[in-house]
Length: 382
Image (cartoon, rainbow, N blue to C red; front, side, top):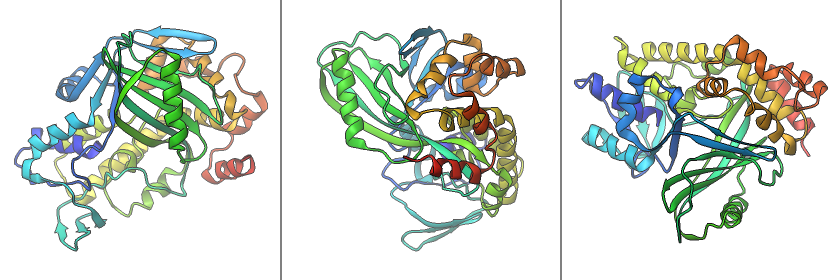
């Protein structure tokens, strides 16, 4: 998604630029639904992204065992099929699909079939790469887009329904109503490891649908994924290991550290790259690294909250943290998702009785190095 947005922006702003996009699969974009809040983007960003948007809603809802709330902020989704179509039209012969890569370097790509391509710069957008310099929790999910035998009655998305059984970690169901009788139902877990028990998550979706009186006529498609949730890290060592390779998206660590949302970061990076005078590999690497460093400094408070969520208290009680958060003023919640918290917001989030044991919360706050977090995770693993 990040590289696709970069390609679209470059084609629009610099049409004479020689550009090639390599895609491992038959179509770009995979099988995903990318969503964002209206407040995540400015008006100009909404305007150029608008042709990609497949669904919009003027409000959304969250549900917890002791709190149900409607929020008035708008929400939107981009479908991978629409994204693929936009790339195919914009890039035409400059999009190579079914083209797996063997190795890549800042100015060279070796394809799996042995061909070698040279360029002024190569941007690596292949998703998260494990690093000893970053400690992560995970948001693991499986979603099914389903058609129903009769209308579902929903008029707005349910971004979190945490009234469901929790299990080993913070669990919620995410529901997007695409038409009157089609839904995306996604079972999501904030867990310590990246593994997904797909059969169990499918059962959860069936159970959730049945509990709401929704009879599934057909599963239209299925998407799954594991998003990183950043707990601690050494950003200098992370980028040192890149060895001058320009990166984008999750590969560059450009995502919201608590929610895993990456589209707003990808939009901003695409705009930034398209504005650069120098698109050589060293210049691109320096620009992306500077962006990632700036975001890392801004996100320190979010990493602290993540450690409290993942490392303090029982995993099946994590929902209490989110339930308390959704009792805060709506403008603060919008700024949280947009990554633009004020000093007053940060104080407001932590003031009062914490929803996790105080001693464990204080201990989690002090675990600022990746090796400390990893040791804590292993020591407390069941």
